[in-house]
Image (tube, rainbow, N blue to C red; front, side, top):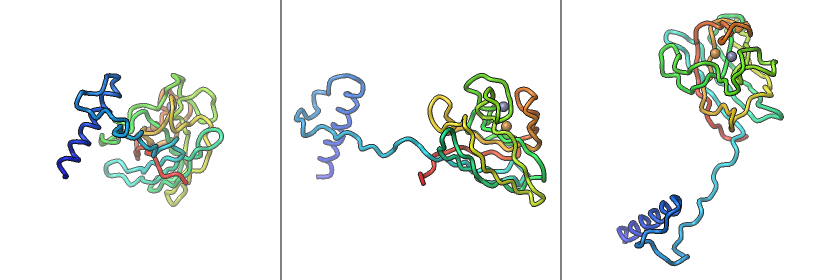
Length: 196
Ligand code: CU
Ligand code: ZN
């Protein structure tokens, strides 16, 4: 019995594969309409919320969590980052969600799908990833709470799956292409979060 149902499943899958490829169903596939595989039930809609958990660079202690929630327009970015030297630190979305290199160079440069120059977050022409700076207090904690009209979760400028980097130094909004923000103190990957 188990084996028989496996065979039916296998031929259904073959038929589905053939249909997807635009070919005709294989001869051994069931011909009756009742045997057609049901259309897959949609389990995902547009993503409305994403999260990035930031991990420290080797021998560092900068860590935290950022949340990106759909706003009108753009995304509301909130979170808390700790372990920072007091003061201003550049933070950006980088092209790759790859924090595997010890110095986080694997995250690539600032996410820049529109081929603009590096700038501050308030500029219309900027890297999409240019979120500007965060400010850490004497306790080493920076709270983030701002809405960025140019960020999108999905689509041509989507940030899902890309990287977030917190830097050692301030972003000057001028130096190309990095803002002269120095080393990479923390890195996280932007992933799909459960909608609220
Ligand atoms: Cu950066
Ligand atoms: Zn930039």
